[in-house]
Image (tube, rainbow, N blue to C red; front, side, top):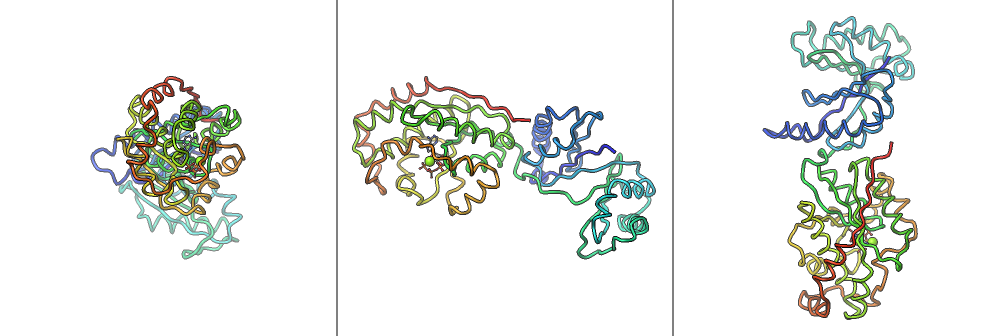
Length: 392
Ligand code: ATP
Ligand code: MG
């Protein structure tokens, strides 16, 4: 029997008048993510997105896996549909959940009914189908308190559906429903997680990486591209902007006091990121910064780096402990790549004694010898763009 997929909407259901807008974004994202899995009909009705295969050649397993990373979906399940009669529903439950009923020690039935013209109440339907299942699978006990298997029945407008427990979805809001942002992606553990967290809030992401060849190697760049690739199931297609950063770093090394190297370098990252954001209509910058983690992440240091931009700087990891970040990175699958030992441009020309509590005036004086605008424009002009599609 070929089944379908039901996606339950998360926070979108709390939206008022603009709810349709969020639903349309979600449906568009779902359709895009189904490319390569066969032809499906996708529609959104009553806080549920119905994903129905249109032929036998659809890969429903692959589609179900793909749907687990779509932001905006709070839970998802595979389901089978039938005519809206109690007999048809009971017959379908016996057939469709046969394996699950045979392997569970106990079960219960839960029903929901949005079609109020259906002849039974939800409780009556649960009792009826529960009775039929108990008869067909005498070794599986009824347990309404803590069953191993919950059989879900839904009577909706045009059909009835049978499914077992839903699995957790990606949560968040549909990518693209909350604008776009530039995310500063290093090869470290933190920034893939911060990128993911902001994408989760419905933001389309443009990842930006500062690359200091030959001080950092081709492998370091490959590592960042591979991290970005790992984020595409959630973020959708990404175009990574690789910014040539070597000249800027050499200028800083040659013309600025050593203890300010990192801070000045980070100010350049912010300026160039804002340049990219303006060019692409992005409304915020995202970093993986985390209060107190390193010298450049004290409050004074963050003040001095963000004072060169006007866009909001989003730092979703600001209050996390490293352990919490690592746990998330492992869950996303980026951790193993992040710990590969290639150097980042931050480790090039690292000051022996970095300034941890700089005043803005000090930092500005320290970079006074540089032609900031020309360096920013030169880097911007040399950007290499790499397009990464979601892999099937
Ligand atoms: P991460 O694990 O993300 O590398 P980190 O703890 O190493 O973070 P820093 O190196 O101080 O911290 O960088 C802080 C943030 O600055 C990073 O999370 C990232 O957003 C940004 N960043 C650092 N280096 C780069 C780079 N080469 N390209 C793009 N962004 C960078
Ligand atoms: Mg880093």
